[in-house]
Image (cartoon, rainbow, N blue to C red; front, side, top):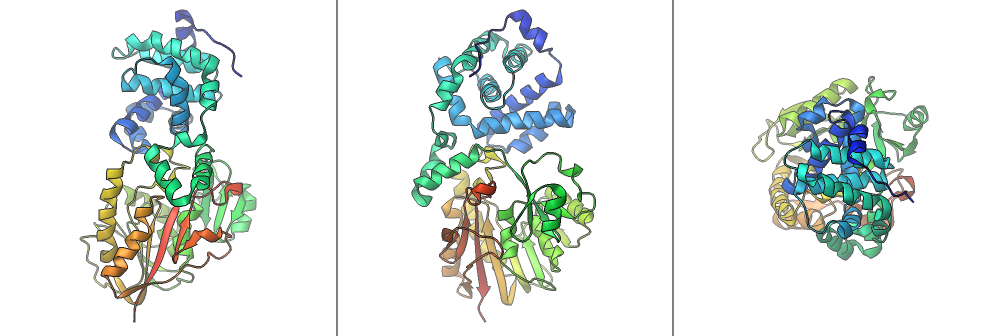
Length: 446
């Protein structure tokens, strides 16, 4: 239990000089949390858009990101800890500062003089928040003394917004909901898809092999500093995101269209297996990352910047079309906990309408006896099987090809349901979990 802590005005400035990197990191984190909650923007986008964030050293940027991500992982418990001591909700930025400071005190092991002092100094440094500095000091002193008690009284599920938690429990069951909530609180791991010799790379990198193609490390850290990065021997990709390509089996020599391809993990997979790949995405920025990874790994693919709904290829008869459709991305919360707070039911409804347009469009590019893969990194049921069912009703030329297993990867029996594949974040929980994914394999009839 942390000891009670009081900070005088003098101590505040002694421990937290106004311009130090620690203070700036905390300001960046608080602003990022406020922006995600207020404008539903992704955390990484908000961070990258801040000049303060860009001015920080890599270590300080990582600290700011860690504070913000931890705040989203523990949002419900943090709010429960603050509730007894915040009688009237302050401005959104000030409350975000209280949330991020509480995350440091309760879950990051930050010394109270640093978390409290620099948060208060941060508020004092801005005219719009200066008047809340004394209030924040008093609130955070109470968090030091009693925050653990109030936060610890709440079950893990309170960290998941109610509208998501209710839907997940209804569809997947309460036990699954509890397990997913526990997974949310854990530090994320790093999965690498390797070109070859997964066992060898697991040994070199001090990780473990997951399935046939994935090496798992227990910490993310600086990916670029790892052995094999410069040589292009692997790329970062969650094991669940690698499954759509794995279920296809041998793709060597086949013409494959990867729609909505960026940032390109599946393109790299396909190319490494000998497929002739065309990668299409409408985001020029995200395609640059794909091109950089192709260059680094020495793999080849035709890269096209275009909207899949408007693009027309010269030869629309691909052996395989893979559509990783834009979705709510709620299945990625292990590494991106902000997705639970930057999406709304309206967002999901809009994405479903887009998916219903993209799926039949993708089907147009599938050649005779070809295969169509539809997948989403979403836990929202409506973004999975119902989209496939609707497509099959409207496009009778296609049939469902049941996915019965993933070679070399032992997944729970419930993973394979109605012919599709549904992974949940607590699968492989003894090894660190995996993203939530939905995959369906469809074939054009003869």
